[in-house]
Image (cartoon, rainbow, N blue to C red; front, side, top):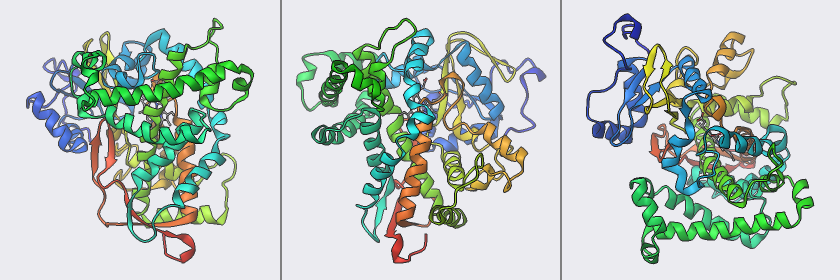
Length: 476
Ligand code: HEM
């Protein structure tokens, strides 16, 4: 929590830049890897709501911890903040140069305008029944009465959603091939061999015909998996182009992207569409699955919330228009209490004024999502899982408004998550389908630790639960 004793920059000229740990960058990165949350929280405790972290080989990162400062970070999207350039180094090889994640400026805006409509709330609502069927089929296969990890189960659901809703693939053989290829591609893309080597060496390994003959190299296995996936995606693109009328009327995101035209009447190129499909896979598959696993992890340890949710789901009670249902509040609180994304960073191409400091060009500026979502002024007793904090009537209107303003699991500014509406729909539908069918209990009583996997925070035991059919009378 910001300490009152923390010197503000205007209180003395001795602190021109936000304070930070004195230990070497290598030690800072080791502490981050060992205990990501603990490290950020130590920064907040020691230095207050804005502080500097240093990692080897990277520009310094100024990190902010309050909703107000986070808004200032997001406001740099209209100025010096470059979210795309920052992400390109990490995720560029998987999603490609033409990805919404990696672009900035006018090219980014052109893509954002074309990718957003098929992911709009009303457009994705049409998929609710399909998502429910996918979730019901998955839950129907779960073992009864034995410990099972929820995160892989949720990943199977969200992968199926991406393949059908986003890629629009119906052919059973193609679906079967992608069920194997896509997880392999994601695993290899996140492997140390691709993420931790310097970008130049990586580019060489990915393009060298000689190295690509060595089948055992992770870079070679990655290129082979990527090429197989690309062949399927390019073929799906070609099929839709061959029948534009059918594509224009089809609801899947790929068909909509093929039919889309920019302000000059130009379509996206095949490469641009392929990169956006990989972007939606990379950004939307594991994040949504992990958020679901965490929400279940919290629910099985919070009996009052589980009971209230199951009562709402099984009684068929629906909330009045405009009212927040308990299900919606559970989803919001799951994303608040256990956010999966560590931060929303921007690379500055000019000086930015934040919290009274002047952050130099070339530095990273980042809203720490977990720190903002545990800010005790916006979220009293932040360690408690309490969906009621989002429900008017259970909390004062001012408290609900404050919580909603500070709720940033999907980031903010112009780079706000493009798939938030799909993610929220998936979470509501999957929670409802699963809990109407089975009761879940924690396989172990203690809270699961937060572990860093690439840039996401995952449950240490993958959300270990025991499932039983609801009809057998076991309690949730
Ligand atoms: C619960 C699940 C999800 C979480 C927590 C999440 C979170 C985020 C966050 C924090 C950002 C960065 C925002 C910023 O920098 O301010 C982001 C960006 C993005 N997300 Fe999500 N996301 C989720 C699901 C999805 C889904 C399902 C999709 C699409 C299928 C998606 C597509 C994207 C895209 C394309 C961007 C880049 C937007 C841009 O730079 O313009 N996300 N997401």
